[in-house]
Image: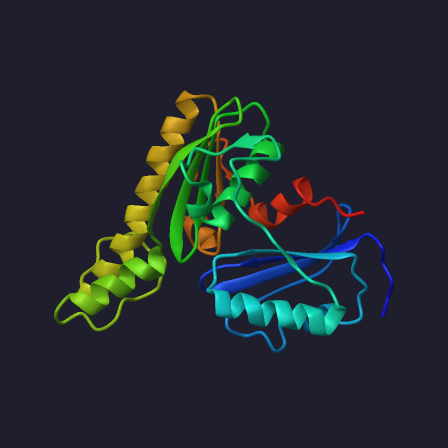
Length: 247
């Protein structure tokens, strides 16, 4: 095993995918991504790397988290620390009456954004299986947000509940469709883009920053040309370093 006393494993477990990386200070030594259920080879490129700690942000079920814990113990003999939501964390105040009911990924993304863009009004839009929108005030208070279906979830709901709709195309277009499947696909994309444009206008009025992250952002960016818009691919993972600095 390659010893590295400052290297830490950081894991972001979402509903559909699990992303991870090994970080030493600001250096990323290796990283990976797989469907959330695929644990056997998840950390293949990190085997042999020595770690001083392992940190996990997970929205998965308890059973999966136990399997993930066992895998990390097997590979590195480390007990991973699971990130939890608290009323105050890393200089950010939470708006929830019961912070434990907030998704850990949403909270970690807000913490990360607050540190990357201090003193700014922030709107964070995480476009994954679900779309999470979080608002952070200039004085570092989380002031609420929205949760709504992501692109895949919207399409699936229409395909399962609408008669005579068997499939939706995936050509990343917002042109009006001439068949029902295209209507569904393009309409869902148009809806999400409209949301982002509305949020962007509101954020600009506050002289703030709109930050996009999540797996569907690459498709959205093909249709967005908004001044000051930020795409931060690793926003959630970056949040770990403000809470658990590598040694």
